[in-house]
Image (tube, rainbow, N blue to C red; front, side):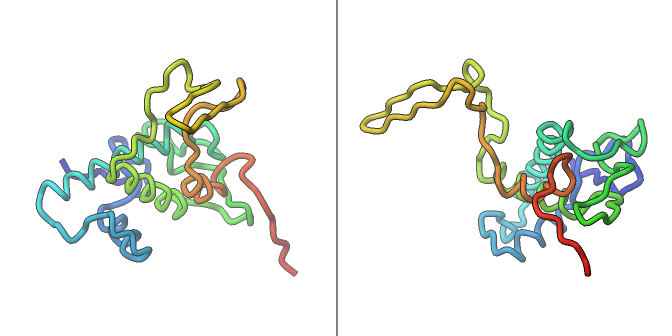
Length: 171
């Protein structure tokens, strides 16, 4: 089943922030050869579309509680578009921001290559001590569970509450 892409109007059954063509172009521009657009068979297209759907769900589930603003409509399926959101420079972000599309594309690549972005974690994932062969790892009792996805989080920074890092002032 093909993607139902959010077009900025609050689509009630949308399952993606990006089109397959947008995601393909993003990865081509960055030289991400793992995103296999050379194999255009139906199975490959379906696998890439499924990765995009799962990536969109990941973005909403993982970062949804931290997005600035509020959903534009109660009927929309996804968390974007949003009302009352601007980036760290004060520019209003309308529809689905480019940063969200890029973060979705990054997450889709990880999924396409086999990374589980939200794996089940034993006992919350807070490992106190683990030894595998000569390597030993110990985490503090307050260590957060799970993996931090730096590229995705940095792309989304301007869309997240508390996401400002450095604010430039125009002269």
